[in-house]
Amino acid sequence: MGDIEGLFDGSASELPAPISYKAALYELASEKDAPVRHLAGYAPFVVFCASSGVPAEELAFDVVKLLAFLRNSVDHILGNPKLRDAATIFVGNVIVSMHPEAHWRVLADGSREVGTRDMQITVDRLFDGLGEADDAMVAGLVSHLVVWSTDEPDESELPELRPVPVGQAHELYERPDLPWHEYRDVDGQVIQYGNRWGGVSPPEDSYSVETHVERFEGLHKVARSLLEYLESSYDVDVSLDPAHAADVFTNIGDVIDVARLTPRDPLAAPLTFVWTSFPGVVVHAGVLHDFPFPICGCDACDETAESEASRLEELVLGVAAGGFGERYPVGRERWAEYALFAADGSGSRSGRGPRGSTPEKLAAAEERLKAVQDGWRPWPPRKTRRARD
Image (tube, rainbow, N blue to C red; front, side):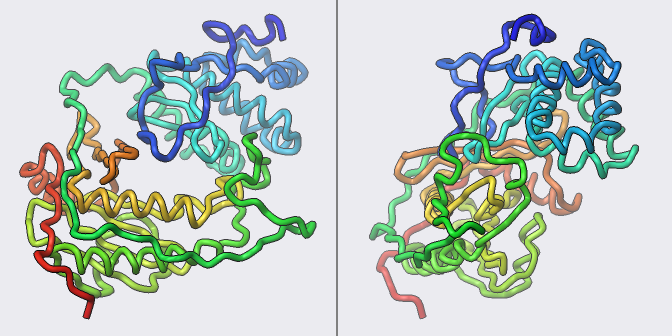
């Protein structure tokens, strides 16, 4: 596309391969693939800017002016999918250019994200709320980006958190059979969930749309199977008090059932299962981290009960095996960090970010995590396996 896409440093390039859920969620780009800092495909937005009397060059390195221009043009941009995609790429390039370590990547659901280990923005969803955002919300976003762009590396950076799963139960866990149903779209075509978009980016109108969420009902069955397995395999106390739903920090909607599992080793991580009416399951692991299943459930993410069951099992069995670690606070931002390694060594994931909670709970978490700085211990196994009462 010639010089029309020469507004940012370096040659415009294509996106890297999507990051699997088995990979670390906030891991930096691999050494094999160079980080993408200048993504191609924004030429239609440059042309649109010129037709609007605003040179794209003036917007490329001025995020305040760019957001003001986008808010004034959001209706026109949203009405043209090709232009929206080009504008999304342009915005992402602008954000990447604000930080020397920022780069593009593609998540497992096909959505595109920009940022660093400590800050990520899913740019594909940026326009969804931009038209409704008020001045204060936009100013808050700008302030956040400016602080991030000027933040120097944290000299107190801790070594990588790598808890090693070593615990072994007497018997291996077996997933129960999941219900299977055939789902069709509005045209009567069978929907191939898990491969619905054929490896290409989902259409814009599939984001924030949830159809056939009943396909996740099997997660309730998997969670109950895991609960029974853990209770019969490990030395753990199980409490079914609905009040334990307060362990979860995130918004979980309508609650159907709750179970808290507390291993009889104070240095092993507890788990709280919350069954929701979505249908789905949210698991609170340790003292600070929530994990929803499914992560989203919208049509664009194209998740399946099978893929989410695998993630759920990886989390729960990894925690019981001692493959889960947490840190708080981390760095000047006082963020929380976690790392999870699968019990069988098949995968890992990690994350770092702000943690919403009360000051009292955060202080209690900080104190408790001092005793497990290298990761939570494996759950103590039962000496004899017993059936659940």
